[in-house]
Length: 439
Ligand code: UD1
Image 1 (cartoon, rainbow, N blue to C red):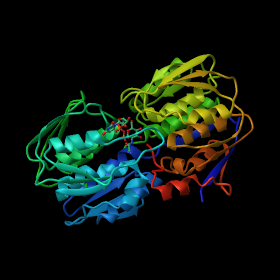
Image 2 (tube, rainbow, N blue to C red):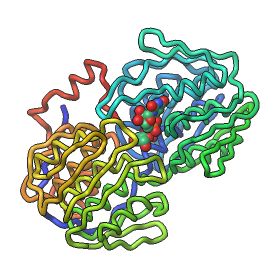
Image 3 (cartoon, rainbow, N blue to C red):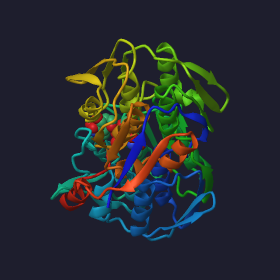
C-alpha cells in the first residue's frame, strides 16, 4: 500500500542536515561493477533508496552478489554473468538501461526491454543505441526489446546529438573494454559522470576528460577490485535549501560540494535570498519574501531539470512574475496543476511556465506524479497555510533517504501514514508495465 504525507505548513525550518550520497551517481557506478571479471567493488555513501534497491535486484538477477555493510555496499561479480535482463525490473526504472553498456562489453550480448513511456515525456534511448552501433554492436528491436550482440566492441569516434547523461555513461562503460581508443564528443558533464569516471579509473580504466565534453577512453583488458565513495547528492541538498527558503527558515546542508550547485545558489541570490556558502556546507538564512526570477533548465552546468519543480514551488510564492523554461524534457510540468490546487497561479505555455507569485499557498490534497514533483509538493506543503496531504509518495522514496525524519529534525510537522484511499495508481502502473520511475 502507498503511504501519504500529512504536513501542517507555515513553520519555518531550522537546523542542520547532512546530504545523502547521490542517487544519480550511485546507479551508474553500481552498473559499472558488472565490468569486473570476478571481482568486487566496495562503495561507501550509497543512499538508502528504492531506486538503489531496484538496481541491486537487477545486478543480483544477472549473477552479482550485493551485500550491504555499515557504510555502503559490496558488489561481487563472478566470471560468468547473465546477459538477459528481467523485464519486470527493467520496466521499474529507466536507469536500468545503464546495464546495457557494461553487459555488452562483458558478455558480447544483451537482451533488454526498451524503457517504456513515462510521466515526464518520452525518453528514448536512441543515442545509447546509436553509439553502441558505432562501436560495432549489431542492434535489433524485437517485440519491444533491444537485442544487441558484438564479437568485440571497437573504439570509435561518437558525437552525441544531445549531451544525454545516460548515453554518456553507457558509452563510457562500453568503451572500457573496446579495442583501441573511443572518442566521445558533446558528452554530458554532470558531476555524477565525473564520479563514475573517477571510480572506473581507480579500477584500472583509462579515461580522460578535458572538461569540454570530449571524453577519450583507451580500451583495457581487465578491471580490478575497487573501493570508492559516491559524491553528495546535489539535488537532495538543494531540495532542503529550497524548503528552507520557502518557509523563511534557517537551514544548513552539510557535506555538499557548493560548486556543484552554483546554478541554484546564483538564482536564489538573484531572488534576494541570503546564503552563507562554506567549503562543504551551505546555509540559507531567513530572507523574507523572495523576488520572482526566470530560468531555463539545461544540461550541467546549467540549471538542473531535476530542481525545476522544487524551485517552481518556491517561485509560486515570490513577489512578481517568473518564467521557467524546460529545455531538457518534453513535458515536465505535471506538478503545475497540483501547485495550482494549493493556490499557485501558474500557466503552461508550450515548454514554459509563467508563474504569477502569490503571497501565500493554502494546504490541499495533492498527488505526486513523479519523484521531483513529489519533492516540490512537500516544499509547497511545508510553506502553505494549513494542512496538506501528498499522495503517491512511493515516488519520493525513490530519491530521498528518510525525508520525513530529516524534515522533522528541522522542526517540520510532517508524518507518513498509510494511504487507505490510495487511488491505485502505483498498482495499476505495476500491472500495466508502465514505469513508476521517471528521473
Ligand atoms: C538523468 C538523470 C535524471 C535527470 C536527467 C537530466 C539518472 C539516473 N537520471 O536521466 O534524474 O533528470 O539525467 O539531467 O542519472 N534523450 C534522447 N535520446 C536518448 C537519451 C536521451 O532523446 O537516447 C533525451 C531524453 O528524452 C530527455 C533528454 O534527452 O529529453 C535528457 O535525457 P538524459 O540526459 O539521457 O537523462 P537520463 O540519463 O535518462
